[in-house]
Length: 153
Image 1 (cartoon, rainbow, N blue to C red):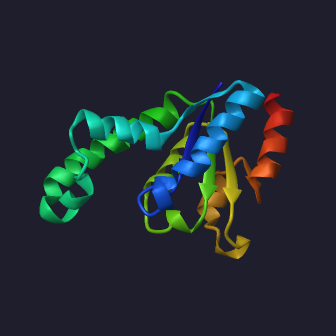
Image 2 (cartoon, rainbow, N blue to C red; image 1 turned 180 degrees about the vertical axis):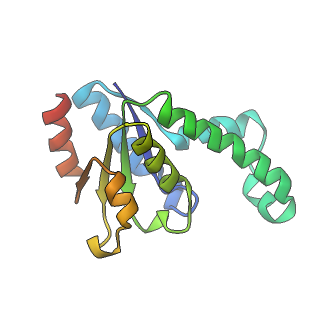
């Protein structure tokens, strides 16, 4: 099985790498599942294109920025709809100013790929759209772990 790890990056501390590293290790150890980690995949594309300063392009060269970001978007879409058996999404405040997580969850729903949402915001603030795209919603990683062990263990 392969899992796409969705969640904030652009406005998240460390691009959201920490929770993804922990989840990757947990999935491998407990379920033998592989992951598509967009933080890792994006870093590969950045290195491939020598684009370490791509975030500066948003102001200095918007068209170059857009074309580069489209490479990242294409990789993420492929990861969700072509490579993943299910999606784990961390929904927290870092997703509010971005767009990728919203799109990934919506695409997964559209293509019938289960979405397991860890929601860390008050339920009344959770988008009805996102809530309804999720197959299951959890209040903690521990609750998700228990569910995944029951489903896939």
